[in-house]
Amino acid sequence: MKILLTGAAGFIGAHCALRLLREGHRVIGVDNFNDYYDPTLKEARLDWVRQEAGDFPLLRLDLADAEAVTSVFEDSRPDVVIHLAAQAGVRYSLSNPRAYASSNIDAFLNILEGCRAYPVQHLLYASSSSVYGANQRTPYSLRDNVDHPLSLYAATKKANELMAHTYSHLFGIPCTGLRFFTVYGPWGRPDMSPIQFAQAIVTGEPLQLFNHGQHQRDFTYIDDIVESLARLLDKAPLPNPDWDREHPDPATSMAPWRLYNIGGQSPVELRDYLAVLEKHLGQRARIELLPLQAGDVLATCADVSDLQRDIGFHPRISLDEGIARFVAWFRDYYHRDPSAAQQEVLPMQMTFPLPS
Image 1 (spheres, rainbow, N blue to C red):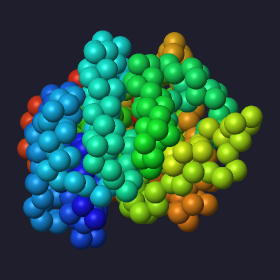
Image 2 (cartoon, rainbow, N blue to C red):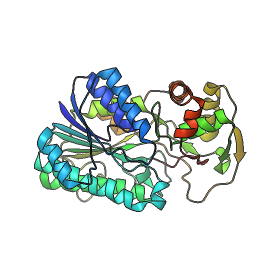
Image 3 (cartoon, one colour):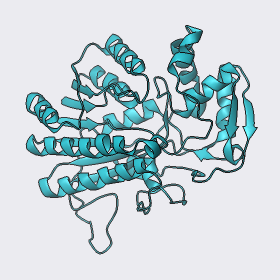
Image 4 (cartoon, one colour):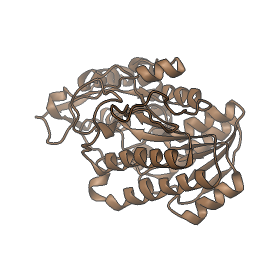
């Protein structure tokens, strides 16, 4: 298939591009290479993909530019769109809200308009576990209420799900939204906890653990995310014939629209997570235990039963195996030159990661 892949230089996007190219798909990548974190990492990801799977076209443009997006669709006429581009980061949305309106709302509207003008077989797009917001019942079910987001980032991801449903209903665009749970692995973002924590451990910087390290997160290894995406690629949703307006199913619709959780389904306590990092790094962390921080989510856990039923797959990479792979990459990328880590890792935020 000819696949338009947005966010192709991002963490998930680069891994997805590699898988698609290896399977023989024609990939047209798009990325704006913004400076939310060092674009050098994005360039390095692309070099890695091209070394492993060959070259592919990569368009450098801002998806909030409606004319540019229209031209991309007109020129490429994709069969499938995988939309992973977004302004990431929960805490960053507190200080830079307009970046989220532009990257996550305006850009997604332009993607939907492109799919409307140049019909595609399937639009898959990244949502987030953060949409569960104030919900405290675990595991997080697709049938749970998600009307109380706790960040603008989460609100934009929920808005994406609603916008996709509208276009699916009005114009018949098959849309699948994917709620990712705390993705980690090689080539990850430097604002996420694996790189932040690993860097603190190897440099001896103290780690401040709120809630005395008792937070839990449902970590999902990157290969499991990509495997799920690959299996969903040719499974465009159909209208649910049993959908009932009186008792609506929040994960399906009378339109060709669908939602899935993609998570490890095995929440890990922060202290156990750190112990695995310490084991594979061969060093101990300097830890400072602190009380619960206002606004922190205590635990996340994905109910992936719908994913298992529809594609026969659930995430399989254990935390121990995933962290081992991550550490091998971390040492190679950041510590071939010891000064590289200091130059490229963002200032450390010693709090447990919010849902992402």
